[in-house]
Length: 118
Image (cartoon, rainbow, N blue to C red; front, top):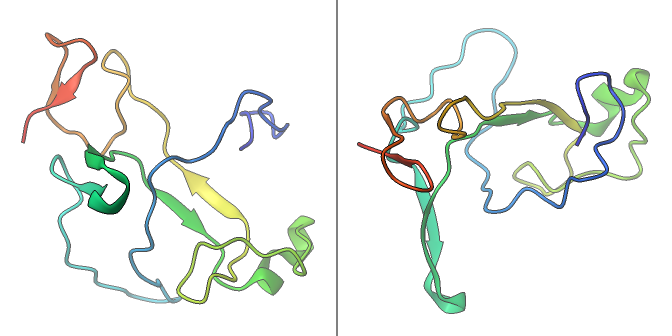
């Protein structure tokens, strides 16, 4: 992860729960899905309870497309259907005062930590 000035964030420890949603192509794309307030993931095999995820990230689909940005295409990331994507191009940040991502449109700050009301 990068800081706002483009330097690597030394405190970044990983993304946590993530999943691949879809490919977006140049031009017009329509994706019908529920992303606001109720998005979550879980894994009963490792006893991970339903975990809400309120952030959104976009990765370059083709590692070659990011070569001019200084990305080494021989070191892809796993964030596409083939697990051979380019680097992270955009990710949301926590929204204050709740500290949740922008996909939570109804934060409940009366709880600690803050929760999202669907």
